[in-house]
Length: 145
Image 1 (cartoon, rainbow, N blue to C red):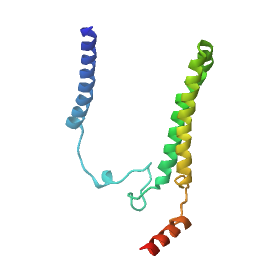
Image 2 (image 1 turned 135 degrees about the horizontal axis):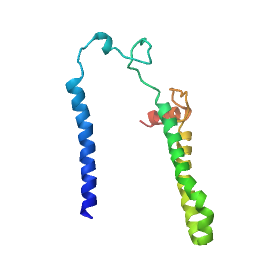
Image 3 (image 1 turned 90 degrees about the vertical axis):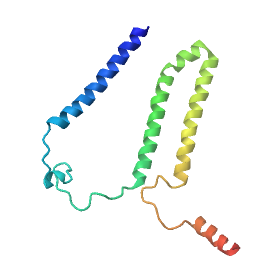
Image 4 (image 1 turned 45 degrees about the vertical axis):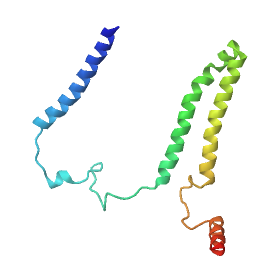
């Protein structure tokens, strides 16, 4: 039993040593000749136009995150769906437990999607002006103060 852990330890040490050895050899052997041309930003062979540092629209990341979440939902649901019939044949209770778990899992994700949609987080072009409800709440707060 201890030998198997020793073998794993040896493989881990060799893997880390191989990576560090490659990095060290590259540092020692590679030429270092700094150049203004080498320091410029490279983007698919095209010369950059303008400043490279600008903000991306965070809505892209929100839409991508929602996509990834539902992809994970499908990846976790599909194996259960493929064996569901066998589970029901083995035990009706097991089938109901699997169904309820999948239903709750999917409903939690759907509620999150509805919440993000209702708050306008999935809109690609979002108006920066306050909504009517926010303007009415601000007006009430000013009157109360």
